[in-house]
Image 1 (cartoon, rainbow, N blue to C red):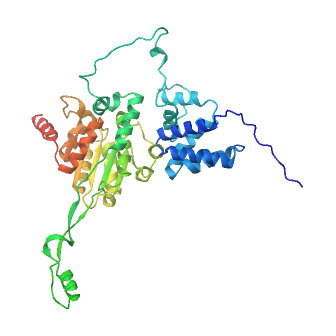
Image 2: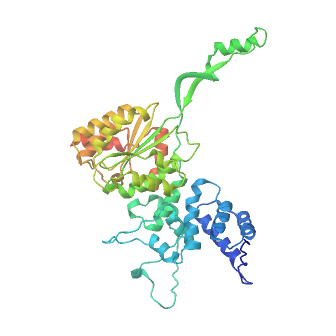
Image 3: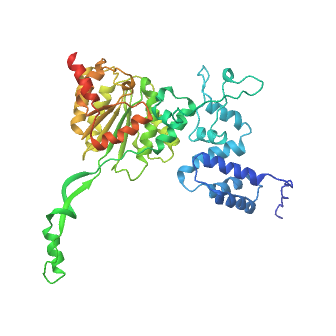
Length: 421
């Protein structure tokens, strides 16, 4: 039986395939993939070699050139689907970028990396809502003197997470991905060879055996250094949902950034129950990591039971993750529905089990904040540091607090208010 022969595709003389591949590569680069001009040239050569007759051959040829890490596949798949396959990709991308009003119909949420792909293909610009569209007519030119204004990045650092627009939140997430949380090493009682004041007799004698028993130099030893664990307990109740998303972006960056000193980063969420999301944050792609964490935590944007959640952590996880001088970040507004006595006992137990307990509370952004809620009054005496956690600047200052061990006097001021009351 003769093999079927398929004719070549009739391509136009002035085809735009190479330009489309270059534009596709620029979209991938805006979405976070490290793609340069060399890979674009390789992609064009690869398509010229495999041909343009089969979609799967076209897909796998481009993926082989542009994808170099497993975590980049999700971004590539979404950009490829939107750019090459979906005939209505423009309308779909706009729906991901414009804030939706939730109605009775079920809203389709964006898949992992789908929103990032939409921002890359639309150059990160969502169309304006109808009520904000400019009227037809001649363009108006407005001159603004920006000599006395601060930069947009500095303004974004101090802006409240809850007041950010969609574009500002996307920019803030990119800034949070660049932040670091360095920590100083801890000295242990174990000794090791190094520049110290103590003589290591065994190492000295072993070195003397190589020189016929003559001691040429004394071997010194110094205390070993080790790195602590970072434990993050993040409130995801309804009043904390917006702040929790941004804080988890920051925690994901800390968990996946090497060279900061942390031995391990463990993350837990709590609303009405405690959920361990540590393994989900190990995914290098932030969209996939947070989507998996959101699917694992079923109590997102629900009620708040801080006392029972912390008691569950103390019972099930404290011995596993709080050893060796761990630092605990507790992110919550302190508005609890549980009994304040049980909450105070759970926080006290947590404080005694770790080296430092740092409380990040977005309510501290308000000037004249006072500990009037029963949950805040129960928790405050048992924390080492009480900080605001509502902006990028507040998370930047957290690194100095962990390294220096200071509090800025905020806890002392609030404790004086508790004493006066």
